[in-house]
Image (tube, rainbow, N blue to C red):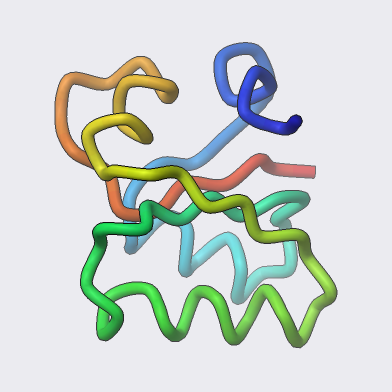
Length: 81
């Protein structure tokens, strides 16, 4: 539902950039790869929940990277408000 927006809307890609955007309350939707390590994504998911931000799970880090138009695997990404 929100995945197509990653190609056209403002976004951040990667753990550090996504976490920073979450901390600054700039995130509209959080994307998390299901195969990413829990210790990598837990903080992101907790922050999203506390801010009532929808979390969309993508099957693999490779697929999330592809949807974001980057050539690397990606654990997290986010649409920016």
